[in-house]
Length: 113
Length: 117
Image (tube, rainbow over all chains, first blue to last red; front, side, top):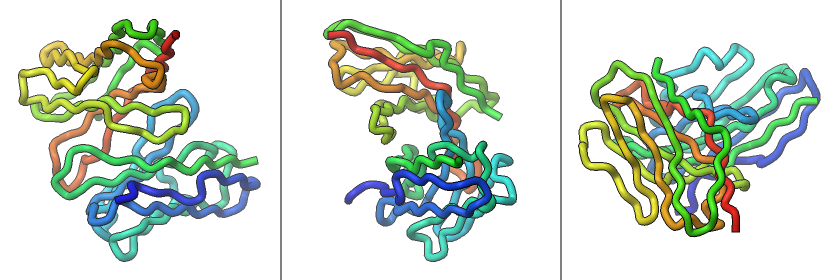
């Protein structure tokens, strides 16, 4: 068990470009979560998958954001037409179906210039 | 929605001493779970300790213990015999009981802990 992994670890992009992040959860973890963390703040919930179904989305997840988990394993988070306000750390977490803790990945730091 | 408040943005402690980090939360639920996570400078969040609201006994994990006051909606973390490796950002988090929805964590804004050698 190698833990939750995220790729890339860092991404610098110009405003208006599209970016995609990947998260590989701990194997056999049914639940997968995306959070956004800005400087000086705690993580804020974006969206949640149970297997391949996206069961919940935060109001923070504007229509420029889309997330998928097509086969119930890895997940992708895409941001279209990035804005400077999108600069943040994007964290992925996973948990087993009946587990209470969430296991976090190292995050992808996005910088929009 | 649930809210979590950490009123101490920064704390410091001498190595080998004890420090307490504060957390309060607001909820109308009677059953829930509370967590303390540690986020070292490398930024990967690590679970420190967990408390189930239905348990009256305070959780303990080695040098880490909590003081859970359900009526006061308070959940503080005590670190005993502080070590240099304890230096990190500490987040208090709340979650509702397991269900198909509402499983996200609500985090506080964090407390940055410095350990002085």
